Length: 381
Image (cartoon, rainbow, N blue to C red; front, side, top):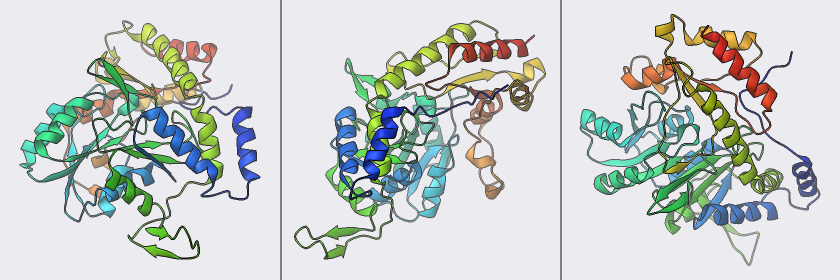
C-alpha cells in the first residue's frame, strides 16, 4: 500500500521540455528565462517590480535588507510560522517580537498586533511580517491601516499564497500586487502553488526598494553596460540569483497557475462539505468571504483533549493507514535554541495542540481523498 503525501508537485511533459530547452541555451544562469519569468509574474500579480531569487528564505532576507533595517530595529512577526523569517531577522540582529495567532486559523489579526504592541510598550516599530497561513490573506487592508497608524513597513510572507486574492473597494487584488504592503515574498518550493525546484519571488511597487533588491541579490554589483568587464560594488550583497533552468520551469508552471488553483479549490471544497458538520470536536477554520485562497493547506482543528487523544496519536494513526499529514508549524518559541526566552502564547498553543494539515495537492485523486476522509472519520468512532 503506497503512502499518500500531504503535498506534492505537479510536473508535466511541457515542464520537462522547457527545462531541456533551457539547458541547451548558451546562458543557463542570468539568461533570458529569468527576465521572462519576472515579467510574467509582474503582469500576473499587477505589481511594478518582480524579482526571482534562490529560495523563499532568500526572498525574506532580501525584503528585510531592502528596507535597510539596522541592528536593534524592531520587527514584529507571527509566533506560528516556519523558522526562516526569525532566522533572517536574527542574522540581521533585529529586535524581534512575536505575535500570538488565532487559535483556529493560525493567523495574526489586527487585535493580536495591537495586543503585542501594548504588552511590550513598543513605539518605534520598523516592520511587520504578515504571514498568510494556508494561503488565506486575511486582514490585509486592516494591517495596512495599522501601518499608517504606527508608521511601520509591511512584508507579506506569502509563501502559501501565490494565486490568492483579497477584496478592496469591490475589486479583487492579487497577493503580490503590494497594493497594501511594501514588499511581498513567495516561495517556489516543490510543495507551493508553482515550483521552480527551489526558488523565491520578491515583489514591490517602490523603486528604491526594487533597486536595493536588484543589487543585494547579486553581490551588490553594478555592471557597466558598455564595458561588461567593468563593474562597481554599491552594497554588501549575496548570491541569491535563480538560474535560467529553474526560471524556465517556473515560467512553464506559471502558465498553469489558474488550473492549479481551481484543482486545489475543488479538493478543498470536498473536504469542507464532508467535515463541516461532521463532529463538534472537529473544527474547520472560518475565513472571510472577501478573500480567494490559493488553498495551499487544508487545516483541521481537533479538540484532542475532549476525545482523550493527542495530536501524536492522530498522526501515528494516519501513518499506520499510509496517510501523511503535517503540522504547520511548530511555534517559533518552542525550539531548544530559545530556552525560556519568550514564554508561551495562549492561542498559539491552542492552535499548535489541535491543528493538523491533511493532504491537498493538484493530482490528489478522488479515490485517495475519499480514503483520507473515511480514515479521519473512523478516528472518532
